[in-house]
Length: 629
Image 1 (cartoon, rainbow, N blue to C red):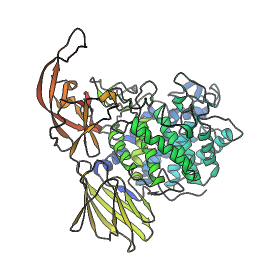
Image 2 (image 1 turned 90 degrees about the vertical axis):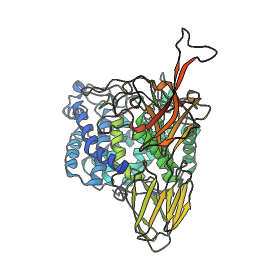
Image 3 (image 1 turned 45 degrees about the vertical axis):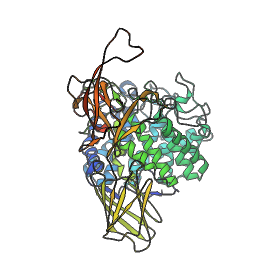
Image 4 (image 1 turned 60 degrees about the horizontal axis):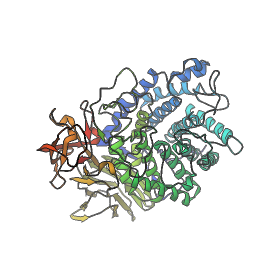
């Protein structure tokens, strides 16, 4: 088995840019470094506790004992949550060398692999005595979806250089899938895409071409009506039209995004640039028509799905955390494939305003959905039982469908992989964090130390710790919002603009100062977004801001806020203050008339806080889009 030397979740065989590994990028405090450490210290153990408490881990013990049909708990996809936890653990172990975590990891792995069948099949919901037959419910069964997360956990183990029993089990399972679903096998797909990017990555990590070929088989079958029609329609799981014929992402948002990631992976590795361009165009149209200001995706609660073009209601936004992670996965793959570092803007927006919004400040409660308006104060989530997905306004410690917490955990564990990328000519810094970056370029090693309080402050100090004597280029992503950005090198200061600034031939010992203006700004929506017409939002740097009821007197309903878009905004330490009013409106027997009849408007200052921080101070109402005066 051949292995890659890049300790990263995505390592394409070709592309304009190359990823860096977690051993090449280290986060040192700051916004993301602190969250990554909280993830290791609090979130990962919390997830392990709940997976034990709910019996999802014990399902594997029962499967090994032959009693699983009598005792199994959790939804049909609960196995995948164990695999996501193991992936998060693997990246953390590889990043930190935490031997206590390694011991806990091994304990879980032994329980998982004990349930594997002789032919490589592994699932606690199907295939054992007293259970439905294997692959008897491809529409909803999630068997291949679970395999996908198993494979990604194995990739993490391979790329961190540790291997072991989980890798062996994953390879046996992948061989089983190729046999069961190959050219002469079951000519169908899984109702939830996930195995496609996982098979490609497993192929990259092991050099086994069969896994790439099987991923392409699944991709080519999708959209040809191979799954049964359902009440939500075949578009729900993207089986309504082939990938090459689709115009925009539709259906269940997470499924669509995972499928797009797999299609990009296969197209890149097979040299099928036209295929990549098709998916790229679909994603661009989705960003332009079906994406929220936060970077969130998914407008429908009933099917966790995209809505129609410009159907983006803030109060009914679903914006599942997993869909945000899926969007980051797609944008990252397109960035590496094309070299277009403006995809870093999409990644930044989604990381700060969806992924960072999900976990609580203590790392032990989570949002599943991420609406842009909360109309009522919800009750605190119960500590003793899992919560519904989208009912309470406070984060919940666990859910009946708990795909999001371990997905956040594995994303934060691998976060360093999204910070920078390289090519033969130099290094590109894509996200601004405090930490160190090392990369090999044509002339030798580049090593940088970044120091910043971003996003609370827009100043980034870059110290060159090592650099080749030959020509090389440092590329810095300049966000589209950063008008007036500038770079100082020595005594010379230069204005720079999106999407990138390039600095040539920095030498060891030099310092570079990047300044990104993060003054708060008013943002208006496309007029075709009916739900927020007549309203504006406020952003500050990469952060979307919101009004939260805990910052107002109890007698003020934030639904009555009106903002003056022409008045100057004032920066605060983490957010902003806008000028506006509190508008009272008279009740009537009939809520429709020729003219609105206000009771009066009282001038008011409107404090705004980062959206990712809302609901950390107790039950509250919240809104991002505020009507104008």
